[in-house]
Image (cartoon, helix red, strand yellow):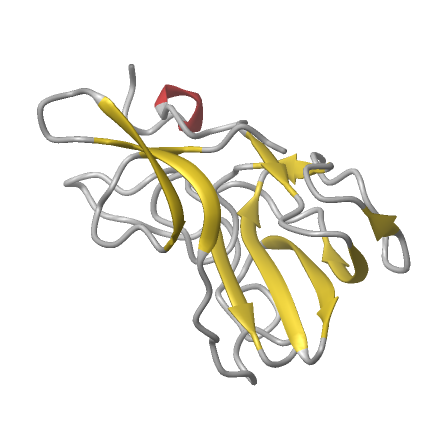
Length: 157
């Protein structure tokens, strides 16, 4: 498809799910998607500031000083509000291209605070996922973090 159309990207609109039972502590919605970057260049739909860098986003309080941050979500897709309790696997929103995003993707991180720019990232492992091997077959992986540009799938549970 047209590389300047967000709908041409496989990830665009894919469901984003809660990583754990948690409390929603921050939601930002209403920022438009960017036109993806091409050889012709890139310009964000709105100026990038401390308030817009993550785009449409959700932050979950996981407890014990750990927060899960989901950034660059699709405008209007967020299904939760600040103060909601969510269950692991619950749909939070959809992948978009808002904020400082050059193509549709999900920025996910676990950090020691609810502000993406004023906290430190924390290491984490994924309890179960499938990873595509170079020859095209899929391998189930457990209790690790997928490194590099691995293609992975989750079952949403």
